[in-house]
Image 1 (spheres, one colour):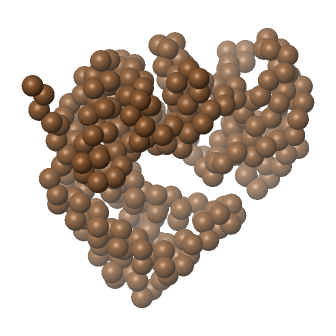
Image 2 (tube, rainbow, N blue to C red):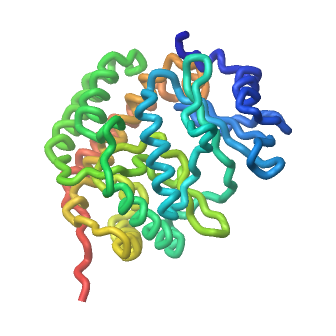
Image 3 (cartoon, rainbow, N blue to C red):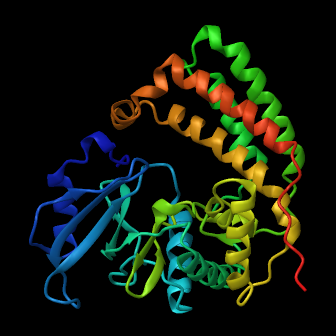
Length: 331
């Protein structure tokens, strides 16, 4: 059977899959904010767990990850949980956490409520640094064999190929856009030369970090991969250069209690930023056939968007030519 199409993933289909697990559903389904996968929250009862509690079910986009890649993500999440790293891990039923249904895969997670982490809050940032240090300590202990590596090919060259075929880029903008794009790709490719790759969260931004009474916790390891450690740190550095240095100092002071940090990785921040910018544009282009994308990202097909992205690329080229952040000497 071929994998289901997301357009065919109706509430009844989701409920059928959950009931096959033995769940007794006590509420309707609430769609959560996810475009790559289909994610729903609900209340229900499952044998072996408290009578009724909140759950989250995630249906993975077909053909994006293989079964082996999904299993590595889940195994990594459980390793982190066993090491007391605060992550939300999938439920294992009869020894299986990657659950097949109608030719695709889904997973069940306990729902953990929290508020968004404030990345400009020094105490919260320090807590995050400690947890990232512990996460990377676990990440260094093994390697992924099936999950991808963050590379020039995956985020720049493949993205360039997708954008070349993107009909949403206006004809009169193509020369300016692709000139800027190719300059950024060339410079970012030259600078992105990581020495050490470890297992990382991969998409460590404020939208995947939450706080509750116990402190910060991580959700959504859907993009975990082999990458330099700085990949999980640089998105926490916002504002002007002086602010970035302050936040970096707070993060690393706590991070290095658990895991060593190679300061030469700071020169990878701007290449990684360029890779994220370009990969995001290509992601939208790649998913444009999904009706949810045209509905939620209508600006992607406007002249104004591509004019802005051309300016963003020019600004990023300027940043690539600036000296990288450097750690302040300690006395």
